[in-house]
Amino acid sequence: MEQMTPKEIVTELDKYIIGQDEAKRAVAVALRNRYRRSQLSEELREEITPKNIIMKGPTGVGKTEIARRLAKLVRAPFVKVEATKYTEVGYVGRDVESMIRDLVETSIRLVKEEKFEQVKQQATNNANIKIRDIMYAKSRLVKSEEPENYKDVLLKEIEDGKHDDEIIEMEIIDTPKVEIMGGVSDSNLTDMFSGFLPKRKKLRKLSVKQARKHIVNEESAKLIDMDAVNEEGVRRAEQEGIIFIDEIDKIAMARGQGSGPDVSREGVQRDILPFVEGCNVSTKYGTIRTDYILFIAAGAFHIAKVEDLIPELQGRFPIRVELKSLSQKEFLKILTQPKNAITKQHIELLKVDNINLSFNEDALKEIARIAELENISKENIGARRLYTILESLLEEVSFEASGKHPVTDVVITKEFVLRVLEPTLKEHDLSKYII
Image (tube, rainbow, N blue to C red; front, side):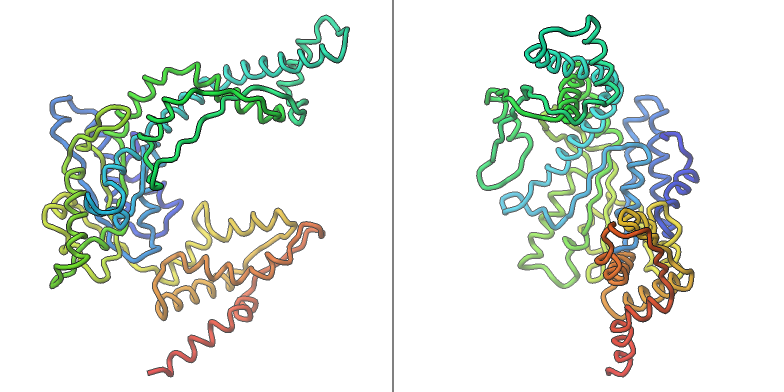
């Protein structure tokens, strides 16, 4: 996936996100440039840093989803942070460095998952043998005589899942829980204190299926080199990491203001600046450079403008794209086209309870029309408006469905939509008379 062309990246993003072509093209080029940079000589590679991106647009139009899907395409380490959670050093709030530490943790988890997958079969074989030995020892206490090949037969049955629901007793490691005073969550401190405490084992009764999961994790950890995992995780975080800073407009100062909370807002910007510019951050896995991390910032910028950010921070986000508000046309596509379309989700959910749900085309058009109308007359919350409408529309159906009845066809028609959403539509009819 690393060698995808910008056009191929956009095609993949189109499967999940409707419209916003300008933003898709910008992130596709940014991702491709990472591959291009990786093919250069080390000397030249050092000189080329990512071109960070600012996305401007109302909530619910796809800003976060574009960044998240982009990271998934290449299994790049990705974290989303909200700028409003940070405050200046010395104030109550999260340390800005935590976003880099979170990125490293995410990266190492990704590498660990890949390595675990490579040794999963061997770990599973080892786990089945251990479970066989536990069950065999237990059976010897009950039966005095067994066939000569009983151990082999038992192992085959365990591998085939025939004993998955049986309960066995086994020792598992009891990881001590450490709470940091004041409720501050810091994985570095937690792990440091946990290291001082002895790891205890305790007997637990588990089903064979649950026991297998525990043992597979333990065996996988023995089979992989964690030092190599950590080293690769740090490298990926440095070279391939993506940090999405949401609500960056909330720490921008609108012109003409400059006191009270706004002083703190500028302080947060100045705290973020060194990481975007490139600096070294100490983590429990070693020092990480932030020079080559791709930063994508996003905000609605209703009150403040991009230009209200401090000039130094603006300069570190050279690419700016504006995402457009969604219209009835886009809402209709969102309801039907994406792989994870919300209508498809509801159809699958209700299928569990013997409801065969379907939507007429006219009904979908009406839902899209109402969504656009709601966003215009009320707060513009983008595609999230569709979630609100569909929950209201299917509330009665979802409540009555129990799975204890035969498979029932439920067709959502335009008339059904108008009847259920009548109070909302009346509200809009009255609003045109209000001056």
